Length: 175
Image (cartoon, rainbow, N blue to C red; front, side):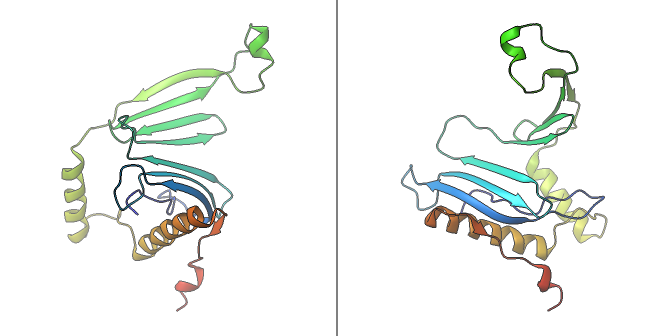
């Protein structure tokens, strides 16, 4: 499968949450042998819900990761290397029609200054640093295997039309 499938979601300061199940749909629209479109909904071990949408057909090139939290959302645009935080608002709306909507209001929006480096250069430098032992940002074989298993579960779910379990790797360490 050409699109990236859900894999481990880690913070450097805490344990990883891995995909446990995935429901997905794929489509072939351009005549190529691999899927052009993917819509996947997954659940992680910590209960987090994930959604992945990959579209190789549309002329709109969008590569965003959105993390929704209790106080707002963080949007990372990996195509432009922009990072934006949209805070939940604290003021009540004066428009009665909108007041009936029970969602949160929009608060402050902060766009963070992020150093923008050419992606291929960054990838090569990270690989070099890992080989020299200067970096601890590398993914493990365990992470790679889980990504492959999650991609396989996505394809399986799209073929059978049902939510599919992602095999657990807990017993892998004991083997």
